[in-house]
Image (cartoon, rainbow, N blue to C red; front, side, top):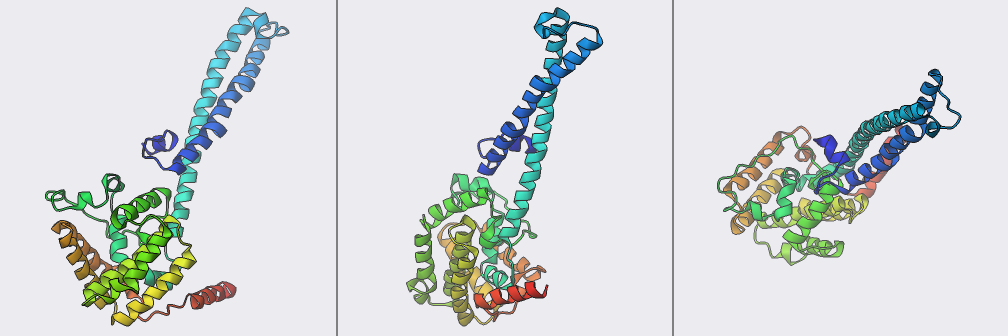
Length: 326
């Protein structure tokens, strides 16, 4: 089924798969059919006719037996080469898709402890979002998560889900899904609106009006989450995302004592929001479980020092030095 969705994309296939299909059809399959029809079939028919002592001077139309050989070879070699082109095209599509997914995977992962620390501030959301089925977004991201829709539903997540910047693999499908989610859940349609929301929650009234740590964690962690999603959809470069996230990160370090206080406060803030918005208790429990599982993950950002150096220039110099010392 995966092979067919690459070569003959259904309605929900990504743009990249359409491009790969186009390349396979027009660069491999069609040329293969023409090769069989215009090169291999005539040569095979001529060789067979000469072996049988037939007159080939007038071409296939000059001799009925030669013409029969030609027609038979035309069908065999055109179809055979086209079929071979299909197999080769499928293999090429699968190879390219696999290589591109590896690239997407690398681009979505943190590259150093600074980026891992930033991701740690919204790791709970990142794991949840990575496990959210794409089809939910097609119906409206939050509607299927209501108490009524999930009264009898079961929803589980993979505790080994990779931790991606912005929450999902950085591919076309995730980018489209996230753009829709930002619009439907935040009413954010562009970078400036996203940055305004981050400013409000991390340095404006959204933060200053908070009365307790749960409210502050809910505002600050969602600020770094939005910046991560801006990188995911391509609105921010990785460097700009890191720089802006570090500004919010310093406020986080100055507001909370350690990872435990931040995470506990965030979960409390999330639960308040979930109850107000009618999110099912089952999903609330999933978010609690995610936070509990994060503590035991070997790659958990929460294992990093709380007072991590949040100077992007320091990490740029450090990376350069490590490369030079190689």
